[in-house]
Image (cartoon, rainbow, N blue to C red; front, side, top):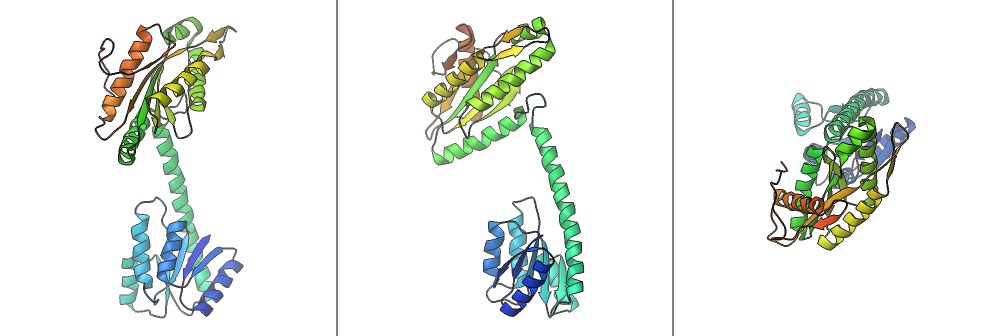
Length: 317
């Protein structure tokens, strides 16, 4: 396990670190609570062993600070307080501060080893739960067929990037992408080939956008790409590159026939302090997609206010 020690007694620290390392643990030592807290914020430790009495920040204060810091994360460290104090009041104070266990000094190696074995069991169970939660979160936010973000995840990420780009006063662009005549692919070649086409387009789009951009399946044969920091010219260039790559795809059907694909792209971007909402951005990109289809498909159209026919826009939420 990765163990952090906080103790202002250099002799005790060396003895404890040596003992822990002999048990094959990875040890980081600090001589006060402030340094221990900085080390804890910099990297995750499975176990924190802290002395009670330290200058500046006591062991219980360090426990409380660590627990406060952990509120923003998923994993929680196991904290052991080492002290010569052993009253019930001291034990209650340690537990209230956030300690998991309590050991008196000088520590007996067998007792400390038993406490660490208990810590290891709890840490392992916690990590298993964390991995399961990550897996469940991924399933809930991933489109099964294409393995891209699903509509729910895309909407969540778009809202976060909208707020971030607004704070940083940077542009934000969205591409709404629709595979042309996709129903004919399913009708003429079967749904298995249609699924292969969706997977191929998903992979193509993911590899055609810039680093930091992301793509998701928006619904059916429609995809959404979000481009943080891209203005309308940059986003149009990305869309044209994606369109060209999709046009170059060749899908082999179950009957051996080669299926060619194309897609239409609607592009919109927002910038400045008076930017509109995420809904407005997606409505504009959707409007531009309608223009692309109305103009003959397999092309990129950018949204320009007041230009072109209106359509009945679908709500993004």
